[in-house]
Image 1 (cartoon, rainbow, N blue to C red):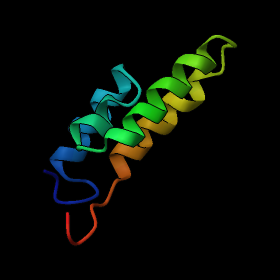
Image 2 (cartoon, one colour; image 1 turned 90 degrees about the vertical axis):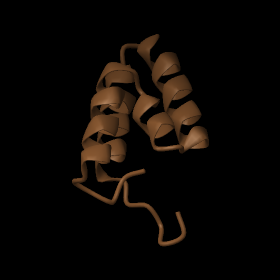
Image 3 (cartoon, rainbow, N blue to C red; image 1 turned 45 degrees about the horizontal axis):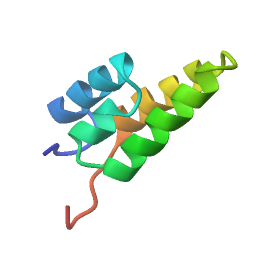
Length: 70
């Protein structure tokens, strides 16, 4: 979908992750990472530390570079 770091696809994915942790990874087709980030953020919000995973999710979506075969 996206051409690489800084592409419009990554910006859209980062915006998705801004609203829901892991949604940007889901948009990029990275199902396992989306699940991990969503569940981890949900669990950590219980102890008010979910914002760390939320930020990680946004940055991960924005900085993602697809491998040559993807």
